[in-house]
Length: 291
Length: 289
Image (tube, rainbow over all chains, first blue to last red; front, top):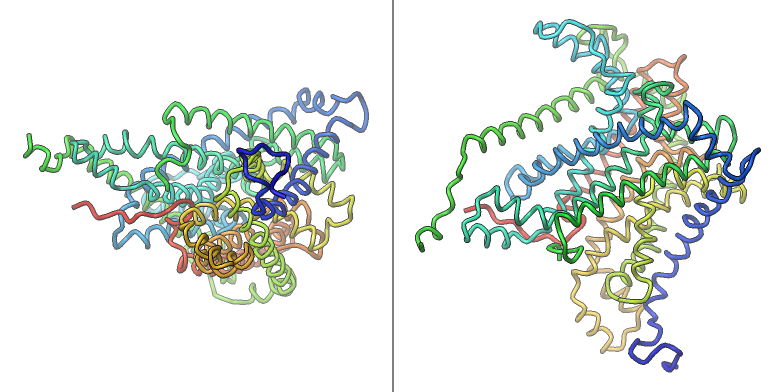
């Protein structure tokens, strides 16, 4: 029975492979099949030739700019989140009395949920909110604060909801790096900055790239906060709103699938760019330094 | 030379260092204080009788919670949420853990392809596959039912379990498995009696994280849920979106209920899981001497 057609150098069919079958079948059935179905559907428009949906998207004035609108929100939000999370996580890598408390407090905003953030921001940053009252009390700034129902409102809410996730992920990557490496570097005379630049950063590059991608997906598919906190008709009409409107307001599933495909395509371009950028910092085993 | 090495390298630029540390602390405080005040604003509003442009409301009441409970059928929404979330966690573990085991231990043809297959759902925005998935689910008449919601939520949940569990499994010494096999245990018994107990913390971590994520996952539920299968987060969105006639305090009360639900689970999770243990093996970082 072990003399199957496989070459002798390779072991016969490993029964452990059965364990991966249910997950594979599930993904093929519920992820790959709908995806291909959507792709096919997007080339089968209600009217016009097979490219009609894509032509419509790229020639209509309230459709194609949604790509830029989305990127203008998602890229800064992701960069801010990673940019803050990295130094703070780097500080928190050392076990101390505060480590657990600070991490817990920083992670709590994960539980808030978009709607609570939206409601909170509308109340707190609003024209009669605590922030504007406080600023007026101190005579720092008397004019109206415009932080809701525009670009900034959505950006702030993306930072509040995205930062804890980025922080958590980076923290777990950093603590996975063997501290012995940094101590060895310090024995050889490397200061804290050199240690970070030459030991931690290169080992962290794969984790950072992964974290950037995951954080970017979250920010990129922003939907509820763009509706609740932004101005969904104007400056924060993101691509997911366009896709949603096509599917559930115009019931044009073909167009909606086309927009969804464009959305996924743009996302994958960004992911590919980030992953190739990673190689500039680090070449080596992908899981280097984390066991 | 030898004394040079024995000495800790002095910081070449203490001023810069102090400024940097202060800046970090300042930013962290700013973030925490503002988010804290924001939550406090929602809490205050949810207990306020009337709150218009003053520091604190005129009077306090709990009527909004009672109203939110009745008006939004919170009871049944919470019930649906619990059913969906626990079904998703259980199913994700059942299909995710065995797959993670094989991916962590075995090398086989097509492994890279499978890894990609399990990574893609986390890398593609939920709306991208959510819309085609909803169309397919409508065709097989699963959309709008609780099963449709569960299946949709499983798509990111199962790969997430695999991603979190793989490093946990890699930590376990394969000799333990070999020992079990020497004594005649088959794959099933070995799995159940050796791996599952050792993986306890990892499984707990993965399931709690999936739980918190599923409660918060908006898009997929939004696209596939019908009126009877809304989870808390979607019901909350509709409550705000279709506001108008409703008092904002009532929405705030509901948002508080949502936050308490997730917060409870997150705090439970953090009791069992050190947040630093998520993705990779932990080595204790010693205090700098």
